[in-house]
Amino acid sequence: MTNNAVDADHLRDLALLRRVRDRMDREYTQPLDVAALAAGVHMSAGHLSRQFKAAYGESPYSYLMTRRIERAMMLLRRGDLSVTEVCFAVGCSSLGTFSTRFTELVGVPPSVYRNDPQLGSTEVDPAGLPACIAKQVTRPVRNREAQPPRPDLT
Image 1 (cartoon, rainbow, N blue to C red):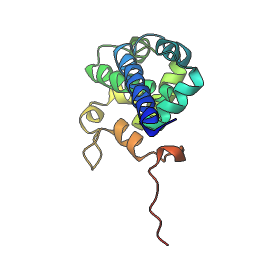
Image 2: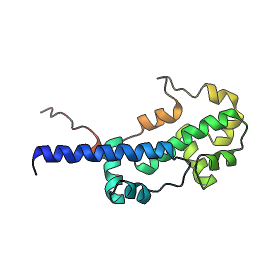
Image 3: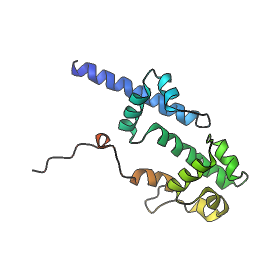
Image 4: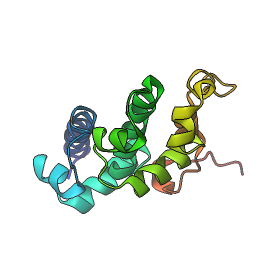
């Protein structure tokens, strides 16, 4: 295979991955799984997961859950919905999984976040990023293939 063909395949895969990411952003309230997302772009679930993680630094599931938690933060700040209602409104089907993931990304459980008006206004870290984004950015990368090559210092 020539370099042009490899580059064309890579660009085609990136366009398909963008479609998957856009679909997750649009349909985050729907029950989405990797198999359904992969079928929508004519890839296998394993290939989609590997390519998505290489391109975006996280798995499709992790990306989807982060988007759901970001939207849940907004709904919780409004204060007119219970934690359970917010959980289901953002597309999660398990309150336990939602609460666990929310706590991992935001740093406090959703009930604490909802009941403390200060958290809605001080959720920015010193670098100026929202806590859920800062957590994603500063998380160690486990996929060595996604990291840029290190320069040879010898």
